[in-house]
Each structure stands twice: as structure tokens, then as C-alpha cells.
Length: 248
Image (tube, rainbow, N blue to C red; front, top):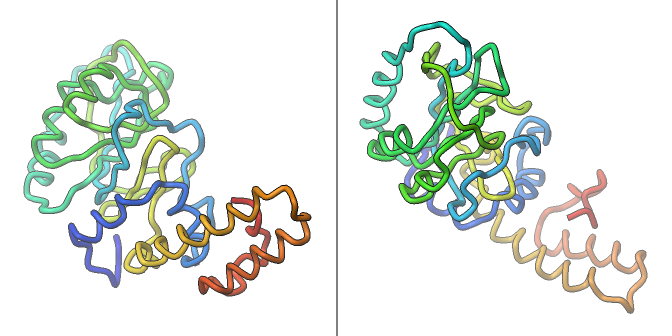
């Protein structure tokens, strides 16, 4: 859960104005979290590129859509939908695939997307595959997953709202997720309140730094010194001393 920060719709709307890589860079400056704790791997990609950025409070589910021979069990799904309906903030469903045939997992299609969207869900992050892409885009419902699949077994909702691991990152109910066509991040609670303000400065820093980095009349040593000077100018202190400077 997010502590010491009141999550508001305005805060989430501010974060939606930034792309995910910029926020990931900024988190590196203002959070104590290690990078591997907040960014998903390249296996989790947007399957609805026209949509996004997607920002919301996390709800979680563990779903089996691939194990043969079992009857469907969606009781927890309808319970989750009622919880979502009562939530006043935009949220994102983070869904863990737990079936016996990972390559056959498919946790979302356009019918389920329409139902989720109707109760305020803006998208899904999942380590499963996805179908009905055109329907997802037209809903609109953004999905970030491992690609496409044509079908699935009966859905069985095993658990809801307990921590789940997706591509090396653990997501918990009440945290905030940010995703776009570049990938998915979990925003560490310790920087949530200050992240938008810091990202504004970081965007200005990156713009000024990039103009200098692309110049062909400057040496690598000059570029390094200029980036370090800009870091100090924009108030990021010595946080690039570990090697972030010039690798943006």
C-alpha cells in the first residue's frame, strides 16, 4: 500500500502527462528504490499502442486461463468488479497468469475489457497474452502483456488483491502503475507525492542536455562536464555519480 501520500485524481492526471521512460529516469533521482524493483522487463509490451499513457491505482488478480479440464470460477471476478465500482480513482488491474500452460494463457479480451472499463478500470498489466485487439482499442482499454493469443480455457479467478509478481516487479493493491508504449513501471511510494514536480525539472534537464549531447563539435569529456553541470543546475545533486550521466 502507498503510505504518507494521499492519492488524488489530480495527482494521477499530472503523472499521465509524462512518458514512462522519463518517469523511470526521474524515479532514479528521487526514490530510494533500486531500478529492478520498479520497471518491468521487455516481455511486457503494449498491445494497444494507440492508447496511453495509462496511470492508475493497482488492483490485483491471479487467474488461470490455460489449465485443461477445470470448470470456470469467476466469483472473485464479480467481487472485484464491485470493489472497482466503488473506487473513485482511475485504476489498473494487474493480473498474474497462474495456469499450467503459460504460452496458452489469455486473461483479457474485448468483452471483459468493456466490463472493466464500465466500472472505471483504465487498463490491465499482465504476464499473459491478449486477444480482440481492435475491440480493446475501440473500448478504449489499454493492455500491456506478452503478446497475442486466439483463445483460452475457462477462466478461474484464484485470488484477488494480494501482491503479484509481473516480469520481476511486485505490485500490491493501492500502489500506482504507469505504462505506455515503452513499457510498465510501478511508482515507488516514497516518491509518489513529489514525482510530477521532479519530472518537470527532469524533462527540462533532458531537453537541454540532449541539445548538447548531439553536437559534433564537442568532445566526450566536454559533454560529460556539461551534463554534470546541468544536473547541478536542475537540483539533482550528485545522484548521477553512480553512472547515470550520459546514459539517457
